Image 1 (tube, rainbow, N blue to C red):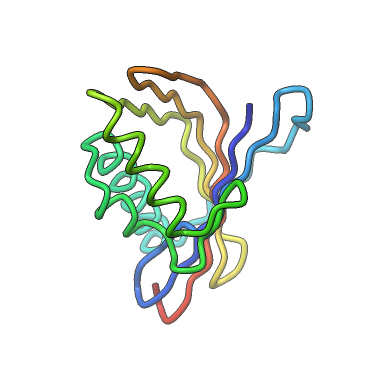
Image 2: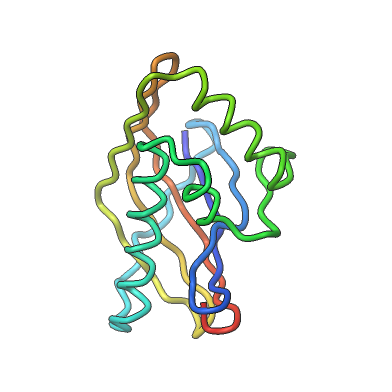
Length: 142
């Protein structure tokens, strides 16, 4: 399965704006992008992804949700509904583990980027391995 998250930069911070999934049979081979050399934005995006992963593993819902923009939606859920959904997972699981590897970041425009990585997710009731794409948009320098 492939998961795609969309993120944008607003007020100096990158935020996740959307997420969707493709089943394995629907996957198309997307070329691996070259890494852009804008070191500050690349570092900011790496930090966002690292903080997002750590907050989810730590089951810190507030920090986790701070990674997402106010306009975020996924699987037909608004940001508020997404938060409730993730809160329920946190309450039901003793442990959440997320491994990220092969992170590639492509700056598409001064205010747009994509991050690609392999993700392994484990909790008490569910686990998966997927390729994830996160779209980011920079707004107000974030």
